[in-house]
Image (cartoon, rainbow, N blue to C red; front, side, top):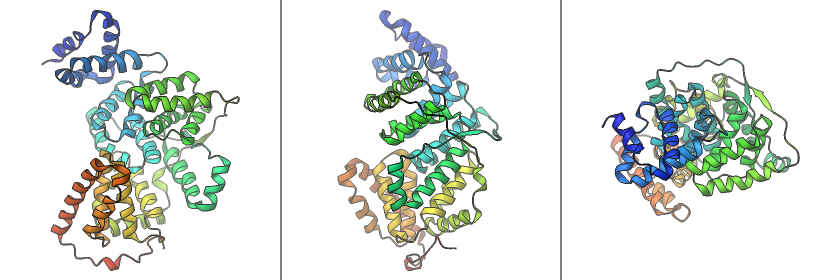
Length: 420
């Protein structure tokens, strides 16, 4: 079916009473989707014409066509929400294309990877790299080399929370300031207003509508966002994250907007994330090699052509700052990572789950210990997620056995990898 035929098919879905909204939605869909704008919805219509009609009329005819935000901003918010979803890869690809079609740049796309790494965890960013690579290669966009700029500042932590965390976990406070504040948000080129709106959308979509969400709303307002911008962001959440997330976010945002005083702008200078502490980075390289047996390095190397600074940061922070610490036995640390990733249950967590299963095996964990670790999560994550995790574990254990790795587990258990 040609695109002309598809466009006609989609127009014919409209009924006389909703035709104006339907055509308005199709026009926005065409602007975002480009040449193949109607392909996915046409396929959807073969399953349900009603669902295809709703898809055109509500997201595009009712929400994305609203005047409150420009289309580039809306696509940034859509991509941020889909990154937080963790299992909407085809939709993420479509809307990252849509971001470029709506006037977005390579820098916008890469910035979303950095923000997601800091707020949602590195697996989210790692999973999106192949999608971003394909999009940028297809568009043949050149790398944008940014000079000095004003970057969004990570919101300050409330003083009472800071006091507790500084007492029980001072390293966390330091990492929040240096890694999240300087190396992640300091490398973002998005206007601070947009960066904080995208951050709030990510947190709301992930279900983390709390103090951090409030803080990013406050920071967006301080950077020039209007009350209408906040309202429009929440309305858009209803499309890509559902009404429960939007209603929760609306309640929190309403309280922020009702505050008697509005915050002042807070900004910071951008930094070059490729110039982090070399000693810290090399410590991370050694820890990565010691634990992953190569599979982790392959993941990190995947960033080289898209966001090399972010790949380097994974090594320096995850492995040079955290995974090398001596308070936990390395094997126990890997079993903990397996627990966290299996409980997430997203597509974005599947490859890192395999990497950390490999690392646990390299460090002497037995298949029984890995299976028991996954069993322990059943009460908290449910059977479907752990069923998938067990199948991933089976594949990784089988590959490990096939390789006949001849490494003594005892060589790893007492390593103080953070020293030196």
